Amino acid sequence: MAFVVCHMTKYASGNLGGLQRHNQRETENHANKDIKTELSYLNYDLINTGKISYPKKINDRIAEGVETNRAIRKDAVRVCGFIVSASPELFKDKAENETRSYFEKATGFFKNRYGAENVVYAQVHMDETTPHMHLGVVPITEDHKLSAKRIFNRKELQNLQKNLPDYMQKQGFVVQKGQSKNKHLDELEYKAQRAEERAKQAQSQAAETEKILAEKQKSLVETKKTVDSLIATGGQKVEEAKKATKVLAQRAAQEIQLKAHHMELTQSAWTLSGKIEEATETLGELELTVSLEEEKLKSVRAAADKNKLFEYHIDNIPVEIKKSGILRNGPESVVLERKHWEELKHRPKQV
Image (tube, rainbow, N blue to C red; front, side, top):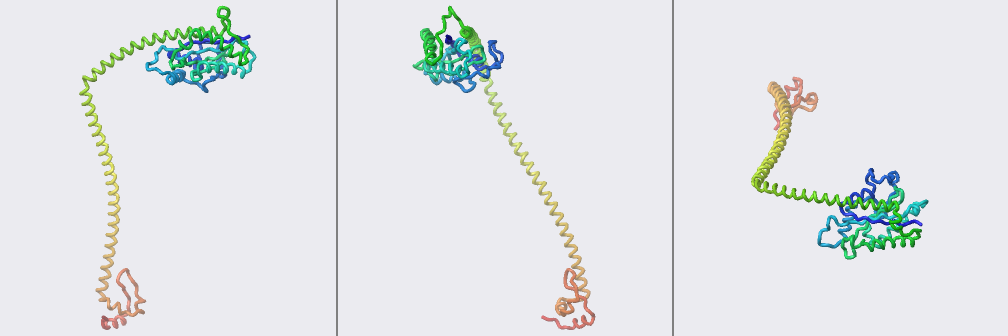
């Protein structure tokens, strides 16, 4: 009969990034050489539809579910990570849907026991020797406090080792409680133990890093004080420089506007110049036409004076005689036979 595997590790805020990269296979350089990267596409998360930000989702849940007037300590446990699986024989020759069902039932157990909203990820790995699941529980108590210590005390962890196998048996899986570690330490529990050791080491490194950051923060505060003092000393000069800069900016803007206006006037001048040139040409043509017409008028008048042909004479010329005449761009001129002209001269003027 197969044995149920369930092992827990506590993670503070400084460990969430590494946890995310491992669970979601976000790096190609894995410390665990058992990972077959060509099979990583078979992995899946029973809580989330795709990759997530562990720090964001976990901190969002804490902000939503925890009621406190004090800031949460940086070294507080943000999530309790469980490795859930079974000894390899359970999965031998099992179809993919049967394996998935095992992890789905186990996830349901944790949801019912610790609150569905507190189970933030359930990442199943199918790319290692034995299928297993990384499940995260944000440890929020019934009175809305963040406390892994209160929820996962020694008694609860002992009950968990008994209650989970019992629950899985009721779901139809042939499993039993894992053997004592003095007798047996299976592959996954060994990996979990090593993971816990690495987590503790990482937490220690995080504490050291926080200490260094605190010292740097102190140095930064001192530097800021020095800068503030320098600014206070030269504050007046800074204000004067600002005013001078503002005046220069205004003058530059005015100069730009004047240049633009000058360009507009220049364009208008060119346009008017073209129109004046066109008008001058037209005037020249008109003057030439008038000059020609005046010359014609002088010629007509000279001919009229020479022949003493008056208007009333023309008015009295018979129609038949007028038909033999021609018009030359001015007063009517006719050509008459001399006998007709003599007769015309002696006719009285009609009023």
